[in-house]
Image 1 (spheres, one colour):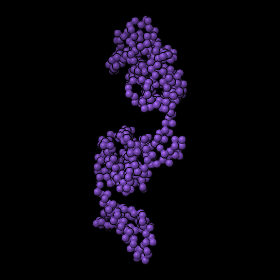
Image 2 (cartoon, one colour; image 1 turned 30 degrees about the vertical axis):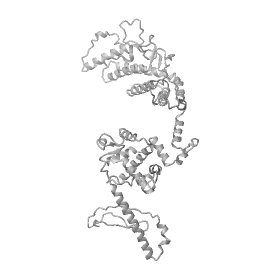
Image 3 (tube, one colour; image 1 turned 135 degrees about the vertical axis):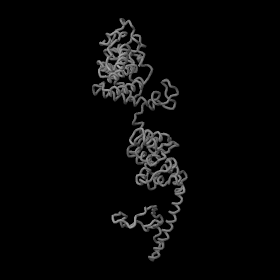
Image 4 (cartoon, one colour; image 1 turned 180 degrees about the vertical axis):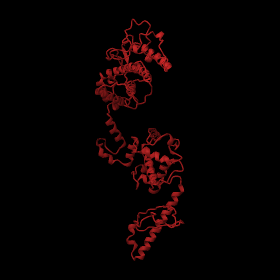
Length: 509
């Protein structure tokens, strides 16, 4: 802070007789600036001396020009010193407020912290009062988004009135309003009272809504232009009349219509959501970046069971130092996951990745002894699930048909995802071969039972054409012998179905 010539405010000349100081003088103004021999005998001598130097600079270069009526600062570019620019005033207010924060750390500040704080408050309230006189513009701007209805950024220093022709550059004042909102939040947090009434609270809320509409306006907001300059020309592929007149609700309905081509735009009601196909639902959820409740906490649980990390789009999220540097409910971890998901250009594929993580989380919760010995590659799991679907259904367009599967365990995409034995490609062939052999054995044994009961199997063969067969690979750990009296085992029960085939291993019973 060697120099506080903020926003181009000129240094007060030595001869100030021709300039009407608009701010009252304080006890410090009566002192000779060149002879500031104050008594610095306490323990804070050096710090206090440096702060006093900056204080006198702020008094001479900034506060000396503050208007008593509006609290605004004039810009040096105006010859009459009667035009106040909003952004320049905010910077001046920040400089004064920053010095006030320094004085708040000192026990005996001689009232300077209060003086500087009130000067910053007066400036911020002056800007607020000038804008509140244009409250009607804010209401019109939220629906029209026209530069003619945007808030002004230049006002008269003495009465806060509009400056005719000062805002002919056709701007939406996104920068001025945004900086003002950020600054006022910081000052209120530092125990300065700037807002005094509910009307002012409501108006500040309207400023936030104004920013929300302004940043989406073509040529002014997030829409990319071919030039960095505001030439008041819209992007070639966007029609201003089509976007400037669409309300947020209409934009939402338009998005629904684009993603649901089989529905008529006129019938977009809440009940039509159930009519969408699984592909359209995934497309909608992926385009809107929707995730289930506690999704990021579930990914955290998966990462705890994946020592070599999680991989998506060739980007590896390592287990360490992620788990040691973050927490499962921390926003930084959620942003890290969203950064990885943001690399997925296809919204349907993004939704499948989210579904896959949710399935793995349920699987790990039900099997606490499981963990991944290799990096968990989400792309590999989904690719193998699609291949498995193609093998079983003989689909000609397996990826598109897989996208259109319902989100369910039976007959849906989730069922194919959890059937992928990650890291063991030969394990699937062995299990499927065993499954088919047991299915053949069960059918032959069933025929033997019918022969023994003197019944014709052909009369009941239709009931066994599509049998419900469950293959469970259970491994029971060896138990001490003799079995303890208080040991808990499987209670006597009856298995459902027609026949149960058990294959014992060499483990002692």
